[in-house]
Image 1 (spheres, rainbow, N blue to C red):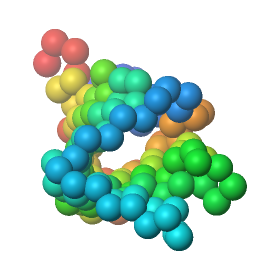
Image 2: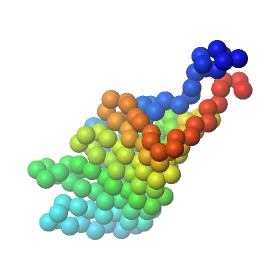
Image 3: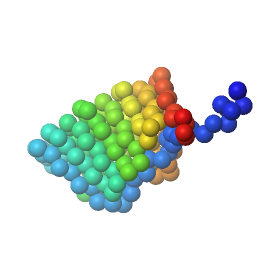
Image 4: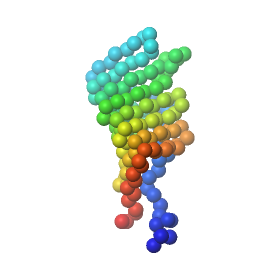
Length: 148
């Protein structure tokens, strides 16, 4: 029944990851080191970052501040990275969140789950500002159809 399969709705919404980029960013960790010269702070050990409904957890997060402001410009997370919002969860080896452009790049065995559906790939780039996303590198999708 090809017609039925072609018209089936998917439950994965790649652009569904939304972040309140104006919300305050809270970071907790076991340790913090700051380099005033470079404007880089490194949080290590059970790092948890919260911004609005977003939760990002990792073993290590490098925070890069803007050159002309004291605002956070970029977060680079490594080590068992988990990214959770109210609607979905993602896992990856690394995450690079460029706050100035609104791009979140997850790389290395990326797994995105939304409800009972899941999609995996080598990398995922999410534009949290406009709600678009792409996945690349041997993309595999498991879609749970309603009632099946």
